Structures are given as structure tokens and as C-alpha cells.
Image (cartoon, rainbow over all chains, first blue to last red; front, side, top):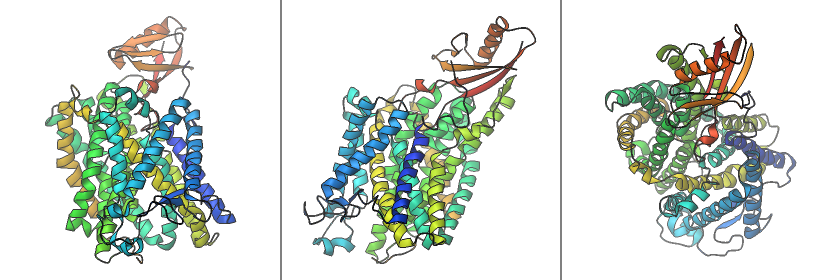
Length: 492
Length: 81
């Protein structure tokens, strides 16, 4: 017997809600640590540049976030155990196969750790400002190299591993889940930063809303019209393609297909394309932006442009993280030291606003389709659709951000104490979940989808609309609402 | 008003609505709705108004996709017998 959907449906059975619970759990742990000064979060494993395999406090560059709490290996083991327990609780509630999940998760955890260690090798990624301290006199300075290594490992599995193994790995390769947990923790980071730069954080928040509204009003109609007129796609394919490419990727394609009552094959095929193009964008766009003098002088706008152009939360956050590293590394060579995380925050802020409006957009489309285009007698479009499709992890992001801001600005907990409890969560823990996202994005991205029968015309349409409409317009809108905004500077 | 909840699926050719007792099919949603009306006519009294809620069985989507969005399609139709 089918069960009726209620406002709380999915609270303990969807990844979106579980991202909120897990993210908030870690932030809460950090807040308790901040309030009591009991070190509840110092165990989180933190990776940093290394040259010698073993130093006093680190092994291959990893150590506990509070290194006085425990040794490096113990920190890695405790992190594995805690992350496994919390995600397994979620997996259990979502009725996944726990045995398969734990094995696949463990493989992903190990591969991610290896990628992190390799990428942190000083000669690969240490910025020149750290060379003297590390005792080296040259380096490639590839900021964020560990992200790319994790992605390459994942892509190798998706595209070259035996089919059975690849499908098995899908049991725990959940990039959207991992990135949503990380984004809730990023809310804690923005909350901490906003204590010292409240005006800038609010400006970023407001600029993100404006850019998102402008993008919604322009992207979708242009993408839909191009799909219909230039590529002669049907209404159902055009609408789903337009949403996927111009709003929030796979989520938008599914929501739109549901709203316009499209057959399920439509979002399934379009989604296969979206994840492939999102990975291409996350590899190409950060390098293009950092190499372009115009964008290098507009780092926050460059970050926002990723939020508007790179579809799927995972790929956008991943691209934002790479851009943040590359931009700061390049600025450092010129003696400018931008505070870490603001460019990434800009990329995520615009994306979060886009995500939040998907419910409203799907509702509008459903009303237009059901009442005006298909004119289905007796069918009703329920306003609750807006809530059902609302991304719940966003609630966690804002709860984390505003709670920490309030506690800090109100001097309820001192800034130093907040940093003590929360920096391991918004720093090391969040970054590890970013890394898990990179490995997982790779695992779910099969480039052979482009060769799939029937997808060629869609792939051409997608590439054309992305290159001719979404990216140029996204860049312009990002610049329009964010130009002149610069990340706060810090001492080297 | 009576309320019925159905699970909705698509087998590649037809939409299928079912709830354990009733099964209705249609190549389009319009045809499905008409067939639901005819099935209900045989089961309920004339003059009754029935609210039919259908939610697509999201488990039929590829597992890698369901992390992106909480559900696919939910419909409500009103049937006057």
C-alpha cells in the first residue's frame, strides 16, 4: 500500500536530510567543545604539506587537528571509525545494504587518504611561502593537487575498472551526500569568518541572491528556446535539459521532469550527461579563471561564476575549492595573502541560492504545464511541492552559520573558544569530506555515457548551450553582482 | 471525500498506477487517469468524489541518481464518480 507524503517524509530516509543531521552533529560537537573547552573535535585527521615521511608530530603529513590530543595514526583511525559510524547510521536508516556500503566506503576512504597524502607532498603543492619552513627550494605549487588526484583515481575506477566493481563502488560513492555534509560544516566556517567580517559576509549573501534571480530569469528561457528552435527537441526533453543545464544539474532535471510529468527515461538520460559535463567544467574552469588576468583581479566574482555555471553541488564545490587554492597560491607569489575559503564560499553561496529556488521553479513549471499546456482535467498541483523539493541541507548550512555568528557577535562564547571547538570541523573534517566528494564524483562519472545511443544530439545541444549561453552569461552576471569584492587579506 | 494512495511506475511503454487492490495503466497520463476513473467506477458508489494521490516509485531510478533529489513525481487527481 502506497503511503501518503507528509511534510516530514524523508526526514530519516533521504541523503539530503541525513546530510543535515550529520553536518549539524559535527557542528554541535564543535560548539560543545567551544563552550566547555573539552576537546571533542581535536581527533579529526588533518593533512598538510610534507617532505620527510615521519616528523615529530606527523606521518606523511597527517596528524590530529589538535596534535597534542593524540598521534597521527591514532587520529586517522579514530577519524575512520567516527566517519564510518555516522555514515553507517545514515545508511542503515536509508535501508542500504550495510555490508556492501561499509566495504565500498572503506575502499573510498583509503583511496582518498592516499590521494590526500600524495597531493600534499611539498614538491607538488607547497606554496613558495612555505618552502623555507619545509626545507625545500623549489616546487610545482599546484594548490589543490590532492583534489585532482582523488578525482583521477575515481575516474579511473569509473572508466576502466570491471563493470561489477564499478557498480559495487556506487554503493558508497555518494558525492552529493558527502558534499552536503561538507557544506553544512562550511556554514560553520562562514559563521566564524562573519564574526570578523560581518559586512562582507552579508554582502556576499545578498549578491548571491541577486545573481541567482538574474540567472534563473535568463538561463532557463534561453536554454529552453535554443533546445526547441535550434536542436528541435520536444517540449519534455527541452524543459528537462534547460533546467539541468541552467539551474542545479541532476536535481533540477529530476524536479523538472516530475513537474512537467515527463517519462522517467528523460531525466535519467539527461543526468548521465550532466555529471560528465560538470566534471569537465570542474577540471577546466578553475584553471581558465585563474589564468585570465581579468578574473584574477575579481576573485570573488570568479568564485560566484562557478556557482552559476558548474552544475551539481559536488562539482561546483569541488571547482570552488580548486579555484580558492589556485587563486591564493598565485596571489601569494605577488605578496598578497587572501584569507582561505572566501572564494569557495562565493562559489557555494550562489549555488545554494540556486538550489533553494528549485522547489519554487518546479512548482511554477508544474502549474504552467498541468493547467495551461497539457490542461489535465481534475489534476491539482500541490503547493507542498515547494517544501518537498526544498534542499534540506541548506537549513543546516544557515543554522550553523547564523548560530555561530550570533554566539560570537553576542560574546556568548569567545572567538578563541569558538575556534578551538569549530576549526577542526570547518577545516580538517570539511576538507576530508570534500576529498571524499572528489573521489566519489570520479567514480560516478562514466565518460562512455557520451557515446550512448540516442545521447549524441543531446550531448551536442548540452555542449552548445553551455559554451554559448550559460558560461558567458554566468560570467557576466557573476561580475555584475560581485565586481570589486575582494577576499579579506591575512598575514602570511 | 474518499482518499486513495497509489504507487506510480513507468515500464518503458506505459504508466502504471497500483495500490495492492487496484491496477490501472495508460500510455499517457491522460489515458491512465481515464482508466483509473473506469476502474474506480466498478468499486465505489455513484456520486462519490475520490482524491487519488500517486507517487512515483523512486526506487526504480538508478541508485546513483537518488542522492541528487528527494523524489521524482507526485500527482493528485480528483475523480467524480
